Length: 79
Ligand code: SF4
Image (cartoon, rainbow, N blue to C red; front, side, top):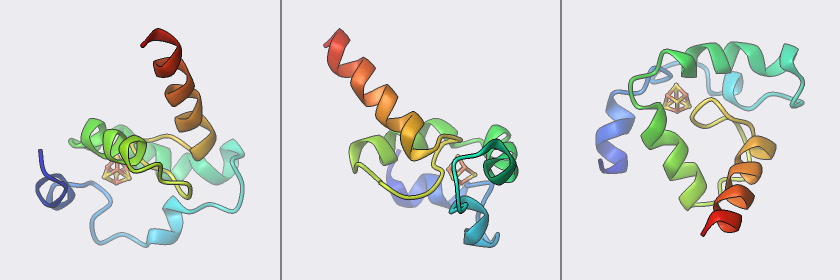
């Protein structure tokens, strides 16, 4: 799925982007974004995009930057 295609179907489309760029990784700060991502129909595509492009900021596919780094490490180990 191309980036343009999945972005059109994103649950966060039109929402305040600040929700997805919380001040900290704490649950209290990330809960709102994760809840939206949790019902997003293009969550997988969004997460894979963030992993592929090493997005450093914000919540993508329901995951914080730290959580995405963990996935990248796990994938490297199992490759
Ligand atoms: S997974 Fe979250 S950040 Fe990604 S498109 Fe969906 S709502 Fe937006």
